[in-house]
Length: 116
Image 1 (cartoon, rainbow, N blue to C red):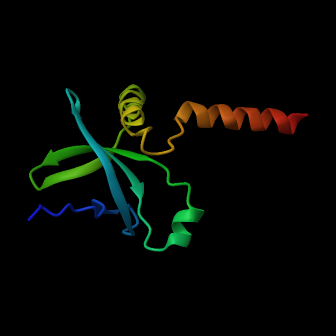
Image 2 (tube, rainbow, N blue to C red):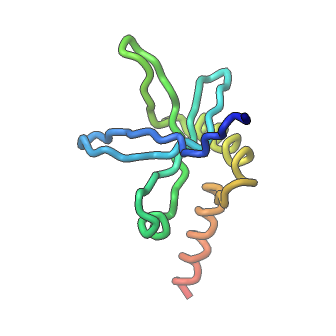
């Protein structure tokens, strides 16, 4: 008998500073000399919610303290840029990932069109 494959998403619940819970699907994890990182997207139970969302990629750093592991946003712009480039390269074949630079360029072009 063949081993059964588990195709269920790797889900993680995060609590924001207001105490509200948010469900995320972990797409990838990497470890570098600087630490361990997760790439996630918001998870929705309803298809309509998924279709209405922009499914923004969220990248978090995994840190440890006496109580265990926790996630933290990457504040260092250089570190974030480096890690997001790694995730983008690893995930771009499976997902339609638009790099931050592409988004900023699109916004700049739209702003230029409004000025005409």
